[in-house]
Length: 414
Picture 1 (cartoon, one colour):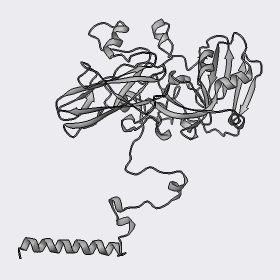
Picture 2 (tube, rainbow, N blue to C red; picture 1 turned 90 degrees about the vertical axis):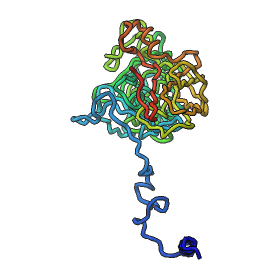
Picture 3 (cartoon, rainbow, N blue to C red; picture 1 turned 90 degrees about the horizontal axis):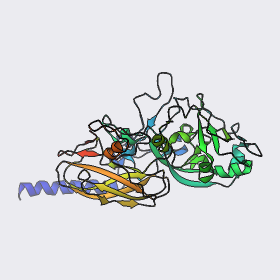
Picture 4 (cartoon, one colour; picture 1 turned 60 degrees about the vertical axis):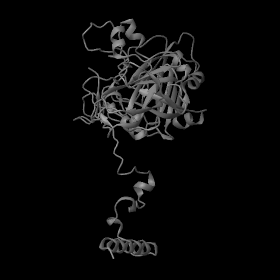
């Protein structure tokens, strides 16, 4: 008999015997010795009580804006969400970006002692307990929040650095209009000031028209209580407006007849009419999250380009993708339902031929607004030719990703 055939038969016999032995209940290695798919997670209080993600999943938030969080004094500042690892449109509560007024210790608030006061130009000043708020008619809606500091520059290398200061969650609470109607807003009351519990008091002036339209006083987030970093036990949600208006740890709303200059507003206001007009509402925006900066494509072939789009002007109507740096644009596919003021997932089928190229995406919202390129933004702001484009107001300019021939991906902002 051929020696090679003999060795092959011996190998097959050993394999059959091993498979049969295991199938008949032969002794197995101890759990600690198992690797790969044979390993099991045993029940534990940590897993059973609240759940725990796989040890192989390592997505995490990072400090944003060049300042440590927490800093040497224990203050939390801006913390960016890992958009490069996102799927779908909802940001997990534990990965939702965080922003604070001027740095903050996260308050440890007992919900049984927390109160929300509505006063000022109202017929019936009211103080609500959490239980009283939860007895009122509620809404559950999907909305994004975005910090005004969510802007790209040439120093950023990943999408977490360029766009990580936005997140999208399912929010549950009471419409602010319900509470204001209960209090009875008086004639001439065109503004309100919302205040949180931070040590450095967070407050924002909000037009009454927006307050009565779609704002939510939220106690729920992604099917559970709002997380402490997101304002537990109560936060204000102002759909489509700059993140600083979404006051966390909400405790007081004063109805007034004029704009109030608050600590939050300082540094966020401008006397320039164009800048002021673009200071509240987030413009149509999108970014490709995969493939994106810092990632590596293994070689030529098919890839599904994927990203997120959103707009303070309402729902995303269309998203376009270019693979040649903007010379030609193609419609991407909207995944699921495009909700108003919410992240929308888009995809685009692409076969990479292995040559260097540039990927971009642009969003068109239901108002017909089109996300601008950085050059268009520079032209709008009348910046001198030859200077690096700097976007004022809310930066919703297009983010370009350069794909090199070796499959590496880089920020293409010059």
